[in-house]
Amino acid sequence: MDFDPDDISTNPATDPSFQEVVASRLSRRGVLAGGVAVAAGFFTSAITGPAPTYASPPRNGRSTAKAAALLGYQPIPLGYGDEIVVPVGYSATAFLPWGTPILGSYPAFVPGGNTAAQQEQQVGMHHDGMHFFPLRNGPRGSIHGLLVLNHEYTDEALLQTGTTTLPPLESWTAEMVRKSQAAHGVAVVEIQKSGTGEWEVVRSSLNRRITANTPASFSGPAVGHRLVQTSRDPQGIRPVGTINNCAHGYTPWGTYLTCEENFNGYFRVDPGPYTAEQTALISRYGVGGDRQRWATNDPRFVVTAEEPNEPNRFGWVVEIDPFDPSSTPVKRTALGRVKHESAHVHVTKGGRVVVYTGDDQVNEYMYKFVSAGNWHSYRAGRSPLDDGTLYVARFNDDGSGEWLPLMHGTGPLTEANGFADQGDVLVKTRLAATALGATPMDRPEWVSVDPNTGMVYLNLTNNTSTAKQESAANPRKPNNWGHIVRWAESGDNHAATSFAWDLFVIAGQGRSSGDGSTIADEDAFGSPDGLWIDPDGRVWIQTDGTQPMGANDQMLAANPYVTDEAGVPEIRRFFTGVVACEVTGVITTPDQATMFVNIQHPGEGEPSTWPHNDGFAIPRSATVIVTKDDGGIIGS
Ligand code: FEO
Ligand code: CA
Ligand code: CA
Image (tube, rainbow, N blue to C red; front, side, top):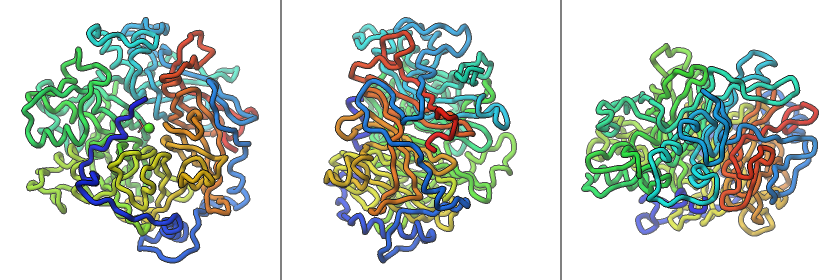
């Protein structure tokens, strides 16, 4: 979008007039000195001395030669056109565009002409995070499964009229609001590969749309909390709907996690008076704006002094069982309330569930949740996602880091400071994290763990705010291009409370450009957002925002096991998106022969008619299916 509210800081602790900016402009070598620990042995104490290297030897028995050959395709140049481009030897096909019928009467897509009820039976708008759940064991699981995908937000002009003309505000109706709400949320779609090799939608009872109006529930420490009670739900146990579903996660027990990101912009805040606590929550979470015009006709999205708590019922990670279409989505409050980006799950050797999740706004924080027990030990009705500790990260400038527990009664998280119970801590996660001294970050987006080394990778998309707080883990002010930080948990234990970090890459136009980037000029990219590390260790990087030379958003793969003479990993551009789109969401089938990539908001503000083969002269968000012509592993 033209104006990105994530670029505005609502964290007063990072206001330079409020707190002095940390002037720790470590040289890149200095930053890397911390990285030595990461590569060498997962120490957590401050590391001094040279010999920096990015390379983390794979420990899955892969030979050095095999690791070196991880990326087998010829990289492609930056893209500028209204076509998806993939390397020679690969093919890309659009699939499941916005409006594809998947349910009920399977109503045909009519640009601007579908009703709200029809949109509820169709694929939503603005595809984002996504996972593929196999429906069969063995090889058949790679040609038949459930594709579950998020629909982050809507382009109201396109949705309501099929054109770029936004109807006047005074003409907005309840039906239009309901249609917009129906285009949000999550889609569950059974898909399979036909005999001709084409993927198709199965008319399945598992197909489902979850929208802004789907009944949900709360679980965890904030269930029933006073700050999530409303007149419609006085017990604070039955929230309705999920919105602004950006990235995602999935659990080892076969459920999907959808993250509520910029929920704040869907509300209108009417004049108070509000209590100091209510004012603090509205301010810190940036509630207001009525960006999607829902407040015009849906009182649930109007905040008043009498009804102040509906925004507190969003900003959670929501668990969905895609295999049970009658299941109720559950908002897991133990994972905190922020503008969640991904909720990447990693299981410790002892079976504890660790969920890495970032808060995507300038100067906000990086979190992880750790379950108290082995997930296998939890029985029906109890979830490891309700029982554990939420931590926020402090990235020290010496390359070490700490996970600070957001636990009521510890440190400053006391009643005297506004945290009377754990529910307070979780509803007010951002405030609690500030009280603990977490490190302000350059917009934490997706997280992924290398299955071969246990290293955690985090995309920091950019930070152009004048209130940016610079630190070694968040270098450059302004940070126009973003970077990727990674860390090793102490003892390779993802439940540990300390870690060692380094900078994987600093994005931009390339080393010779003088913009501070560490990558080679031909690997130029900006605004890393989506991130996924495949089973072989390829680090798939997707972009959203400022791109070198005004190019389209893109996807690249990095080989973390091979570095060049400058100590930077091998990177090859794999995919370039269409005009004015975001490339977000990536997963493969288990055999890695089919990759799904989402294109969000093609042609936003610029002319685009992608996908071109659907018979409509308008742009539509869609999933792209990428295959290798020889049927091999994507990226090999
Ligand atoms: Fe929805 Fe943080 O991107
Ligand atoms: Ca994102
Ligand atoms: Ca983004």
